Image (cartoon, rainbow, N blue to C red; front, side):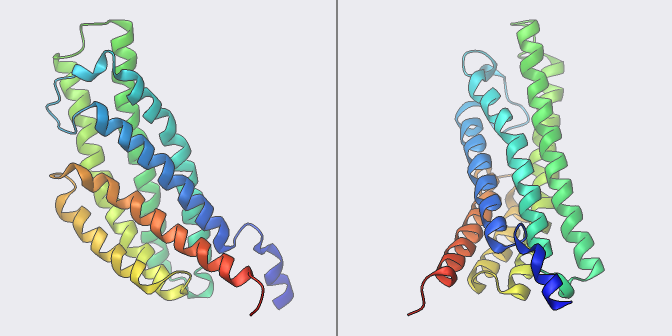
Length: 220
């Protein structure tokens, strides 16, 4: 039985979580950088970015689906690391918060994408209109309030997984708790809080990868 349990470890190793986490972080941080350079993270955005700078937003929207896929892989491998320590209540919150985050992120990106498609169909009519204001406010509220609040819940549960499994340094879990508090209190007020969540995933993933390479190194 013990030998059988060790066989399917190829895709469930900490390295898989690290690679997926790094990929998710790089893609989402790149998408957020493009968005922050172009549009204003405010529900009353006038829409002056819809013209010549819209290609940056379109590129960011194309990166988000791949970031979401990488995040799902990261979440699956991290959850698998719990093993026999997994608690039903805890696992439900962890899995549910992660899935909700990805779903809300996709819906918010779809709303912005709909703005770009509508503008391409009828240039000059959308910016400043009631339709634009509604779609923009919907995307802003969904991303900055609901998606980020759910991301903070994921941070809390993921940090607890880090503490229980020991797959990364203890300080990364403490940083995760602090990041969750920052997001809970300031995601709808401060724009840079969007960068906190993928940055934490990047730090944790890099730490996991470094630990695995040290273990795989030649003995002293």
